[in-house]
Amino acid sequence: MDVNRDQIIAWENQYESGVYGKQSIVLVRGRGARVWDMDGTEYIDCIGGHGAAAMGHAHPAIVTAVQAQAERLFLAPNGFYNDMRAQCLAELVRVAPPGLNRAFLCNSGTEAVEAALKFARLVTGRTKIVSTMRGFHGRSMGALSTTWRKEYREPFEPLIPDVTFVPYNRLERMAGVIDATTAAVIVEVIQGEGGVYPGTAEFLAGTQALCREHGALFIVDEIQTGIGRTGKLFASEHFDLRPDLMTVAKSIAGGIPMGSTLIGERLGEIPGHVHGSTFGGNPLACAAALATLHAMEAEGLPQRAATLGARLMDGLRALDNPAIREVRGMGLMVGMELKEHSAPYLAALAEQGVLALPAGATVMRFLPPLVISEQDIDTVIEKVALVLGS
Ligand SMILES: Cc1ncc(COP(=O)(O)O)c(C=O)c1O
Image (cartoon, rainbow, N blue to C red; front, side):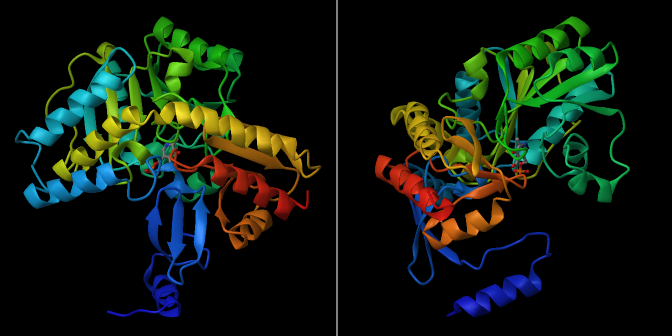
């Protein structure tokens, strides 16, 4: 069927739930770090599927793996074994921080968090969860209960009880709330949606130590920081963290929907039938994840993220523009905080052919595919300079 741009926009406006704000761009094609709208206008994609496109669009190894698997088998229920699932699980555990030796496979970030919270409550027999102010962990009821922004939470209260929030990077405040009733603490290594705030070694390692001391579980949410984006496969590696539970999603299957909750030794046995997911661990997503993990290693993409992220941050800092309050981040997870609202600048940047996203009201966030070229990074810096009037 031939549909034109206006028809597409009208249908989405009319028939979609209404929960999303939208820009009037109809994306139809992508390759590497570029996407195109239906009129052929090209964009450098620093939104990258909200950080899910670390491998870039239409990565050949992932396309081949998905095509081959689609011709063999889409679905293999979890009551059976499957070659792709087995290999994907083994590879995930191989690359994960030491001590994480099993995984629950699902389909999104919020589901991965949901499983982590359920497992934590189940094995500790405790209910208290500690999360952080500005933290974002998803939108389903459990994950939402640990998400900070009140605009997301309040319309759905009462949420799950016994969740406490402490200021991020304030270890003394964390020490004041973790106790013998705490099932788990959940933290991001770099707060993404909250404004791209990197955690300090003192806070992250200190929180882990407090968890061990009080018999609580340490959940690290790597949904946005994993995989490869911060310059290491998992951001936990920068601080030598040993999470008891680690949540991964977004880029893990090269853009095909997948989530995973990695499970550490301290959890012991998870009893049968306490959790599950129809599509979790489906062969199509597992084939994509396997191809992603292999290609990420073979192409040295984490190192590339470190080098190009430094280039982007140095370039943005060098603009020395009075509108910029701070440039911060790690690898290709970069936030540029302005002294005013970022929305008009993001719209102007899109007009200039660069897509970037907000993080809170004043931060412009850049989450480009890790395969982005040096020239594209330089173009992004130039275009930012242009819209800020540097
Ligand atoms: C750190 C973090 N946790 C959880 C989520 C939720 O993931 P999803 O949108 O796949 O449910 C996100 C999404 O942005 C995230 O950044």
